[in-house]
Length: 497
Image 1 (spheres, rainbow, N blue to C red):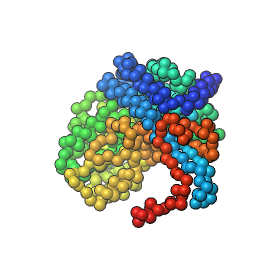
Image 2 (tube, helix red, strand yellow):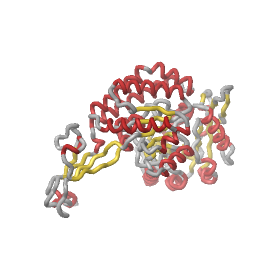
Image 3 (cartoon, rainbow, N blue to C red):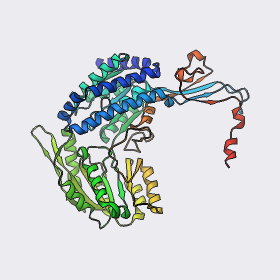
Image 4 (spheres, rainbow, N blue to C red):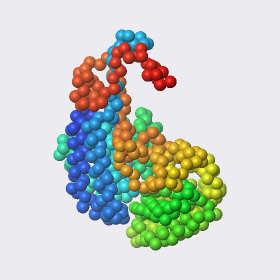
């Protein structure tokens, strides 16, 4: 595909120029893109409503999030801590012999291919977090548009491309491609150095395997699936049942349940009326159009499997109606099962239901929950726990430890939907939540995915990257190991003994 080759080579050439841009210039690109998106909000939201079925309030909020994270990464670029610059001075009296001058920093990895998501047409799509963090790292970006919102993808790309060009970005800094075959071909192109993806487990696993099987394998950061279990203790339920029910049903049905952080399982004490009350609440919620037909058909099949499971009690049957255009319109579904039924029917119940459906699990022995979590659940983006005031016990400590092993973010007395864009955020977890459990796709640490370490030994000052020079022209934090220090290694630790 000649077009694919041209795009990839343009991104390769642009990445070389971007890597050398001073922080204020690179930050200026991000700020220009953010301003352009804000100025075009009305037009973009109208397209998004038409293509995705999401309402204007949700889309406006998401577009604001998109511009905010671009601005956050502009500050991250100027701050410069992400370079992790380390300088070991030459040392003739080094404890292990003569030490050369060694300088190490993180540098841009090269062109990044971003597979856009369907459920966040702004924040995880063309100009979303993956694009923002890659540009901040100094990498050119190639976006593979999602077929669920092609018009919005093209218009967003036009706006961002123009803003970047006007701000002085090199040609090839930001490009859009469309089509499944084109995306796979680009993933295989030798000029592409890393890729990101948000989508289904099947598609993500396929693309991850493509990235790994290249002659020169590349990092692939995929967000693939998550069920986000939440536990409510008896004390918490006794204290604030109404608030817990309101938060749970809102989190399950918001955006028609098409959120990767939707609480798919809610564990409550056996004998409570949570199931029936939750069913009554969501029964008052009207139908909501799902993002596009493929998702609607997948959800319909998944929902049918859940509600027909032996031992499942249906509190809100819900369903999917298809219109003349093939779009699916969903009503929420709530079912409950005992913990023993979940264990017995795990092969049928544990998969993610991408839509407005959640399973309430009734437990009898709280002491069993930590072992159950470890046995039942694979990696998840989040896990949550609702506690009573001042509540603490050995089983809670064990459960939190089990949740910490399972998830990238552990929440207390809250709901996992509504991921804050902030420096300390972690949006990633063990497989199958993400393909790289040590990375995040939200928050400033997301920039680390698109950097790689390089050490320079005895390099002339003129040939060092700016972040490693003694005059430090970019004014970044540098961690120095002075000559003679090695003779005192261990003293600080010993002093704390």
